[in-house]
Amino acid sequence: MAQHPTLDGVKQIDESKQGAVFFPESEAQKATTDTAATKRFYIESYGCQMNFSDSEIVASILADIGYSATRNMEESDLILINTCSIREKAEDTVRRRLRIFDKVKARRPGTLVGVLGCMAERLKAKFLEQEKLVDLVIGPDAYRDLPNLVQNASDGDRGINVLLSREETYADISPLRLDSNGVTAFISIMRGCDNMCSFCVVPFTRGRERSRNAFSIVAEASDLFAKGYREVTLLGQNVDSYRWTNPETEEDVSFAQLLEMVALVNPDLRIRFSTSHPKDITDEVLITMSRYENICKYIHLPVQSGNSRVLQLMNRTYDREWYKERVAAIYRIIPDCAISSDIITGFCTETEEEHQDTLSMIEFVQYSMSYMFFYSERPGTLAARKYNDDVPLEVKKRRLQEVVNLQNQISKEHNQADIGKTFKVLIEGNSKKSDQQFKGRNSQNKMIVFPKREGLKAGDYTEVKVLDATSATLIGELA
Ligand code: 5AD
Ligand code: SF4
Image (cartoon, rainbow, N blue to C red; front, side, top):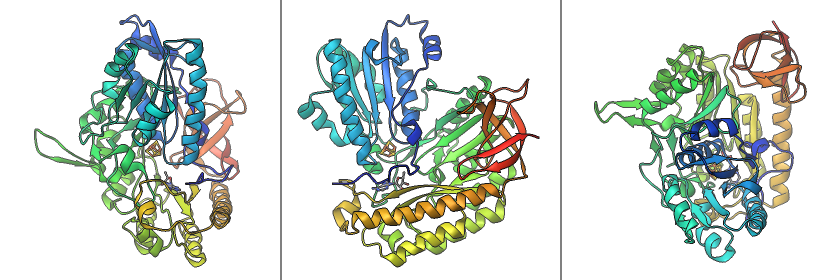
């Protein structure tokens, strides 16, 4: 079976947020005053940003049937866990959490427990039959069925719906912003994935790719701006393949066009997006980014490996030369753009020379940061069926450590090159360490910490001069 694909301490997607409990008491209550909420739900989320964004859709659906959110599972009527399958560790954590929820159930009979998200599809039978720990199992495309399934479960029937859909985008559901800083928010623009990278479980857990109505995306962005938000991140597994056909005009909206539509909502609304696929990112997208100051100059462009043979085995459908050409195009069209990556070490049959190609790619691109993993076989994927997972674990880990060391050094140099520069920063709130300091990001997605000044608040833009830098953060002062 798969090992946890990351080393302890290595940065990985949303690691700081894993298991985050949402506590939108004020928002949830606002949203449910009309329906006189009598019931409460508690939700924990794991995995990628898309999964966290899905939890906000779930919260909105539950608010409509009179549930409000609580951060205290002991007082909840419905305990939900939104799960991830990409790493075995995430799956193990979910199993441990279910045993804790079971104790709550024992103390408060009638409390319902539900498993949502990517593990639901993979392990539906196991959850309901063998483990007997859960009342509801609901896959990522079936959240509209929650009210039904909750009702059935209250009547004593276990509820399950893990059907994947070709159409569902939840376009009309206004997400209930959970655990929000009131400044930055995510907007899902598409669901699923058609790429079939051979290492990846996502196409099996989240189904076919489909794009959301462009006007509903723009409306959501406008609504967020009106509520005081100043940054939206457009989310999809492969945003560059966004394509929505307007049913009235039959006209297609591409990702570049969507970016422009959202950028025009207001010049003070910053736009970010994730994730870009190297095979699909077009010059049109890069030119659109260069034209609008409020489209952030930052691209997450996962390379996975720097070697063409390994990339082919991974079914990434680009090679080393193609990737380098796309990077050159980014720096040509947007000279101040920062690029980040996802990297996997020790994929099936990877040799030392091929691993060296990954290291030299990191040098070539000069990533501002990367999420780094060692390969871990996932059941049902193309690689699990076709290839031999033959690189020993110690070798995978040693190669990962080499990648991490190099990336840390390059991140530090990248940040140190900013010393003396002044950036426009969107203030997100107090820094982690001190309420005398603000934290915020520049366009390149770098976190900057700086002393406060009277009159400035979260959601304001300000100019900050960089005085010092570590591999993770810039330290500055108001310019
Ligand atoms: N093993 C290791 N890393 C993986 N990723 C996805 N599947 C696997 C796997 N089986 C990494 C990829 C992807 C990121 C979200 O997780 O780098 O881009
Ligand atoms: Fe995890 Fe992938 Fe599902 Fe996101 S889409 S929750 S990363 S398995």
